[in-house]
Image (cartoon, rainbow, N blue to C red; front, side, top):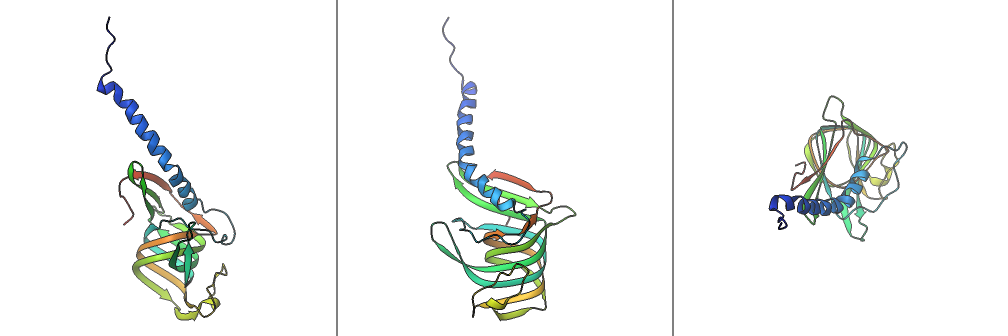
Length: 209
């Protein structure tokens, strides 16, 4: 009896398995980055500065509410030595409603979006001693007791983060931003509570905004 030929339907699973294996291997570094982005739960003060990746990411929230806000200019340095001018935003305590964080990456199987979502229910995401290397920010902002043009080395916050002597700085007792849209190079926090955390990897461009 002649040996039966393999039909296309029978051959498809092997081909698909190969593609998904490549996809999974391509995402190993991405999921490692996700662990860094979402596992900020260590108690205590701000961690030491670290080299940022060569890619910025987007953050959005329906509302950001914080106390103890300071900001000054600085440089974020990537592992390859490239430098990125940033506005360092320091917030002692912050709450974020409907938080979304996204990274769009090129992989061997095309563009992939790593999405992190939290604080979408009644309890917002929250953090203490948060430091953000901001490249761009937009939204409707409200400050109380706002000081603009203060020497960056004299800024006051719980983490003790300050800029250089003579540098431009600003600070406020409270900050509220509605419709937050932000591009950043890094986020660092003493504690970060991501209520209702959902992490997903989606083929294509599905960034937060």
